[in-house]
Length: 544
Image 1 (cartoon, rainbow, N blue to C red):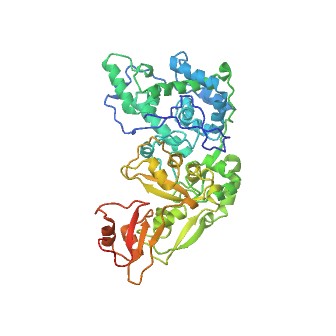
Image 2: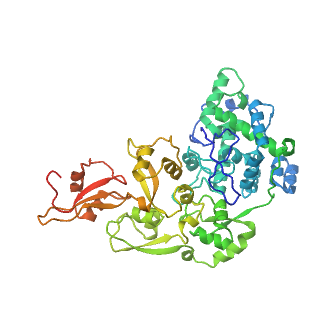
Image 3: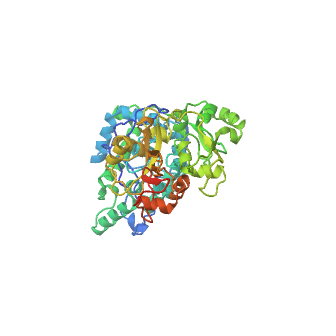
């Protein structure tokens, strides 16, 4: 699991946005690569044969002491279990970095404020080392919206496949990798599994969390074959992993003895910050913010798993609300029916429209439209109406939604039209950007990729084009007037997302066979959004 450091951002805890900051690991980020399904060939008893176990049973006395602490940081610092050799070269280097960057420590503490108590409580329930509550500092600097070029997301930096393996749902509305409760549960499950795989050695478990079980297992077998020790510092591991574990040990040392390094850590109250409120149905997040007395930024910061302007219609039906605001929120919510929690609009289907096009226009998804309107397939009829959930506020109001965070390139959300472009063989970002009149930087920001990312045919890119330069998804009439001689009109049609040959043929009253012939389409060729098709509304010219 090679990892590149997620770009970090300097903002107050409730007003997180995407601004860069320096990282303690030389701008290298953590992104879980590989799968948790990797099998290590060496038996458990052999893997840990020469390793040093870091696990120590927590005592009742320590538990009581933890509850007396008023600051969660001190609670963590007073109960550290992992062996820290601060003279070890890499650990010493990371420790020196943290000691020089008070501002970084301040930002991390601000971001961790809503989450840290909950994570510490979950670790104690499982009798896991409290140092693991510091792992999101190394992973994401506790930025709930952190996203790496390797597609790792959230404070625990799960990549999609590993997230799915550990039960983190990911769809248009919701990404469980950013859900504080769900992702914490998944991360601790994963770490416990690794701890067991590596015979109770937390150092090796952490290394595997970073680089994958396979890499650590191979390194162990290589050392065993050579008769060498198999503790973490004796293994030949990827450079980033060799830096990863020492980073955690270094920040643990800072938390344990901040005064020793002339560091001040902003206190975080050793008490519950939020409640998990069952809302039972979908709700507009602007409405939820008003009901709870929170700003929209505060609500998204506590509930970063929700991608859009509302919660996922099929769940999870849960919101994290500050303890002090929960009673009032629950009372106000109880007075609203499920139907009143979302604004509804009726859309009369126009000729040539598809579910995909309608869903894109209203910032929803096809599956939601089908579910609400009880549609079994994608066929819709001109003149019929669809019931559509719509945002209560202008989309730019939802300032920490996925759309708002991605589409920073436009002056404001809603200044342009959103399109989905399917990558074809031979495409590159420069050509795509030139075609749509946008920059490569914008393309990368909107799609969470880097300018060096490999473009795989079939992958979809989201593109926003300002209205005045909108050059896609339009029907361009090239020569539509009929002459007295009966010469046919010709239409150049630019394919929309969700279009099919059948839909286009129905729109213009021609056959699929004719469209294929006019455009030399191969039998199995798929239509691409933005592709131009020649359509003849009368008798086509010779050769067409």
